[in-house]
Image (cartoon, rainbow, N blue to C red; front, side):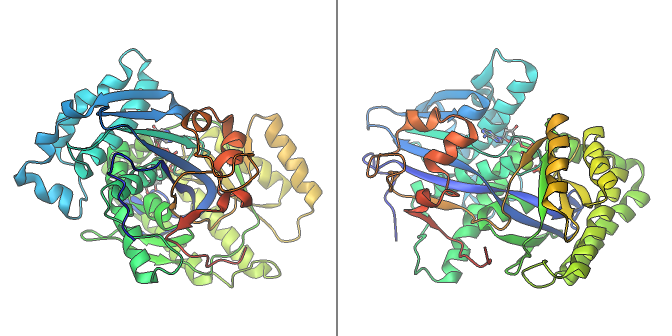
Length: 457
Ligand SMILES: Nc1ncnc2c1ncn2[C@@H]1O[C@H](COP(=O)(O)OP(=O)(O)O)[C@@H](O)[C@H]1O
Ligand SMILES: C[C@@](O)(CCOP(=O)(O)O)CC(=O)O
Ligand SMILES: [Mg+2]
């Protein structure tokens, strides 16, 4: 099914991609060790509006970070991106950034936030760079004007793969616009769907390269394909990915320290440690990889309930994995406080998830913990300023709503186009979920996913 979205009359459409939780193996994944990660029910949503033929501008409206910038399409450095000698950079698999491209983009990316404080400015520039790199690689100077409006329910910079989910949305939207994707549709052969996911994933990785320098690729892989994966980066060629179709239902709690940090800085920390203490660091990274392999071997049936041995084994591995991450220097006192509270109550095993240095921790509960005990713990977390997220693991990967109209009566607007302003101004996570959240059953109507439901819910 080909879509003619580059036509000026193309209707508004929306794409969405999930965040992720790394259950085992962060950081070591960067160095080619295996990792296990699952897509979560928090997601990003990107609305693409085509402008009339006479308006040849591209507007990036990233409301969550306060970025709203418009470029004239004709002023962008198309000549640099589309020179014949650079063809391989946009026609084949791209696994590194081109310095000439980056240089050409930089003044345009830097134009987005001239007068902001340094920290916020960096965030804006990273997102704008990822967008421009993909837009110029995949798009054309003849392109009509567009508005890209993004909202996300994933906390930014908290280890839940917000960057990857944004990059998957951008990649999917742009590939749809150049008619490079077939589907998704329910009777699409699995192999074809997998190829489409991989196409989206590869360009999302390029976006991640713009945001964090040296990503392993695990985040974009699990965001694009959804569900859960065992992921291993290879020294050359594409990574090895096993889709985990029997990922267990975990009694899991996700707690956010609310301590912001940047993945790029945490990854850099480990790199410095590896330079200064190569042998010891390699042993730790290898140990983390062995934990992920062991977890995969011990992964029981789809359900942990009534299988306390398996749960206990995974719990022990979670504790060991966290210990190794502490040794790498990527924990934080707030993360240790979460672990301390869980350990005192003796009700489970905790590890940081994602790049650490702040961000989120996951706790796997022991079997048969009373609901009241969990409630008491949650109250302590709230009192100390931690944020608890209710998530489901194994969510759908990238999906498309085409055209972007309300399909149901919950918003009282069935059949109406999803209004850009309404989406832009949706009030926080609740507002976004209510309006378009695919986790809300009524809102799922009309969404199509390349991934299939393989997990028991
Ligand atoms: N909702 C969003 N809107 C715009 N940019 C975003 C959004 N979420 C993430 N980003 C980009 O991703 C970066 C955060 O990525 P990263 O440090 O890898 O943390 P995370 O663990 O959330 O992926 C931000 O600096 C920003 O550039
Ligand atoms: C630390 C790392 O393993 C995961 C980073 O995840 P996040 O950006 O913190 O969500 C880096 C990577 O694998 O690219
Ligand atoms: Mg990230």
